[in-house]
Length: 117
View 1: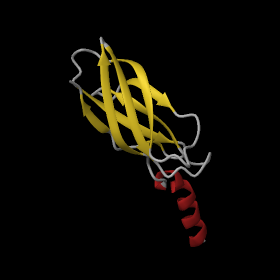
View 2: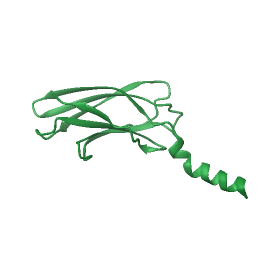
View 3: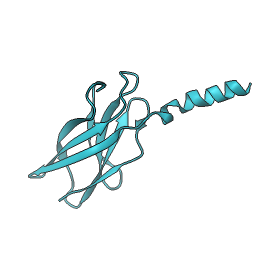
View 4: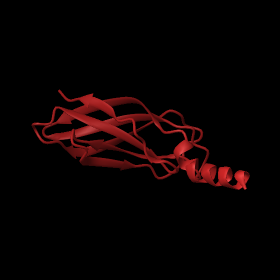
């Protein structure tokens, strides 16, 4: 009986045990009132069953300002950089958060804070 309970717990906890994507670098550029984010991620992509599937820009209260979906695994390309243009950020916001996601675990808890200049 104990083996079955332990197996059930492991099966349920699987997504939580998956490695979260790591934000390696963020480059930010502003043109007028529009922002561009170039985010470099690394993740132990294994294929369609587990891969970094996106990242987003959050304001200090956690509201989503922009999201970059990643349409496929990057098994052979690690780390990799993808961009998101056209992000509008309110003038009073001086810092944003970048949060990554993977197909198994969803949005990761570490949020990288970026000061805007």
